Image 1: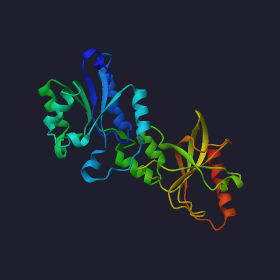
Image 2: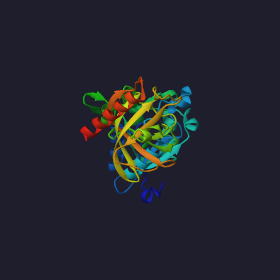
Image 3: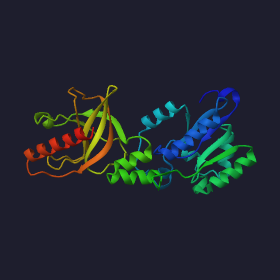
Image 4: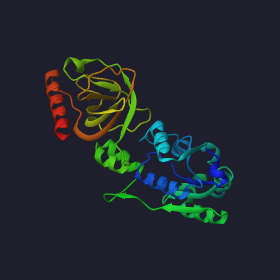
Length: 295
């Protein structure tokens, strides 16, 4: 963190921010606006998801740490990372006193309507507001954010991704769902068919989209291309681990070992096993034409 803008304290965004969807961004945007030019805008993050510390397992991720950090940087807000295990037994009042006041010098805090904090999540947004008033801290609670009649939540977005409703997921995220991972070696069979592909593993702990074929946007060295991405186990060819396999339209180059960004735009069809490679090739041609037609 910086010098807290000439010792004028911080405006702090509170929450898990595990998906950084439009509900989370509403909290971030309000924090930045309230900080203005006089205070540092800060988002408090845990070193691990609170559910992992409590139950032993974190929910599947919707965004990588790298992408989340990049979004924070672009928005002009500084992360403050704290060990969840260190503070998980704090009472709600201890959390405010020992973390928000003593460590962050918070003058303003912003959270969502369903924010929980303190030992065993005993504190809610209303209690936070009451304690903050006692400490002379302004507390702003952001109301539920709704998109097309549906309340925004990381759980709802995960469900949409897992069901292949990627357009709904993208609308709730406020960006296209995707990943930027290293291109790994494949069997190079697609190249012999006239449809070269890049193979990528999904990030560790990432939510797995519904197996099938998607229209995608692929960014290679700053240049955007249309893509056809298959996610799954490639039943016709066979593979043991889930792979992302993308044919990049109007691109011919070697990308092994490079990180390539793939964003899923539209679900085209479910993954299926074909009786022959000729039948598979015809389907790939149809998938490519579907993407070209939608461009």
